[in-house]
Amino acid sequence: MAAVTPFRPLADRMRPASLDEFIGQSHLLAPGKPLRRLLEGRSLHSMILWGPPGTGKTTLARLVAKTCDSEFLALSAVMAGVKDVRAAVEQAQQMRAGSGRRTVLFLDEVHRFNKSQQDAFLPFVEDGTVCFIGATTENPSFEINGALLSRARVYVLRSLTVDDLQQVLRRALEREFSSGAETVKADDDAIATLARAADGDARRALNLLEVAADLARAGTGTITDEIAGEVSAGGYRRFDKKGEQFYDQISALHKAVRGTDPDAALYWLCRMLDGGCDPRYVCRRVIRMASEDIGNADPRALQLALEAAEAYERLGSPEGELALAQAVVFMAVAAKSNAVYVAYKAAMADAQKNGTLDVPMHLRNAPTRLMQGLGYGEGYRYAHDEPEGYAAGEKYFPDAMKPVRYYEPVPRGLEIRIAEALERFRSLKRG
Image (cartoon, rainbow, N blue to C red; front, side, top):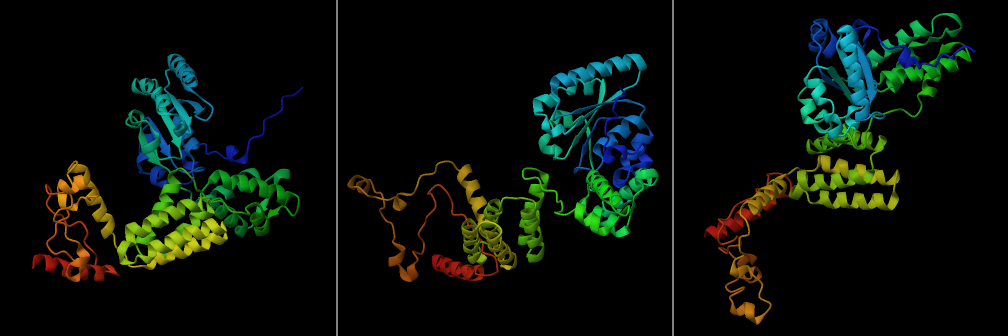
């Protein structure tokens, strides 16, 4: 009985066979760019390829080995362990002894290995037994062992542009669907629709094309924009609830609010919600923004943020998300002040630096006769009984600490009035 040829997805069949066929990553691979120069000089070195899915990390690792005339061994951190690493190293040593060629040991999803598992590569990278190439979608600064990271260069791969993806799709149509019973054509609008739906991911673009081609064969043999829209319905946006995309997007939302750009703030809010972020997390961050970036310039921001969080708890999605959008827009246009945030950090630094300074006797509470007899509360001036409700000259810091001015209101919003009131009280103290 003849062996059945295993099915190879279109994305695998379309892997570039040379650097010249590689689409995208021109910042690394265009003539004269750093990685291209090193590879053309056959300068093989360990590296970490960091980028979103479908940007060519595995393909590039294969091309590195091929360009540098090296053996290629591949492992996936999803399935492999230290035992597999040792077996691969033994195989590399045997191949080196037989052919004299170096081995590229490629580990996909390297961030899934813990730090001790990553240590298994160190001695073999150090002595040149293997050239290590790791691929990851996560930030190497946080996910890769520092010792391994110091022995490898990090190359950042970017999402493919719509133009890049259209080039990938047209090449696939020409190579895989232009002859025989497999002939399939595609409208320009359909190619553009598929490219946009792939969201920078070449693998997804080719998977969508493969499905669209099957539908086209059942009809006219042409992938129309209608077919492209059907296979890409629902969209696809990258958002990792615990990874780099998550923290990048919440950072963008926070900075847009701080920068008084309600439109950008709304966009990043919707990107996060659309990507599956828990709205409760956004609620917590919005409450933080109200205190950190608006503060007393407009205290209504904190109230509105809390009310938005409560509204979401009462209504859920999607109704409650509108209250969250309202709060984000309000804070984006509100007067800004980080005076309380700055003052809090400075006061906390002093509290941690100065140790356990005693509370002055006149500020201590004296609920018992013993404490009264020891002088607790003696000499305290009750502010409400003083002119203007202010005990001018009273000291509230520890005796061993000079008074420090932490809070400096900004000339915006309500803090203008706060600054005026504080200056009036300070003038009374000076008098």
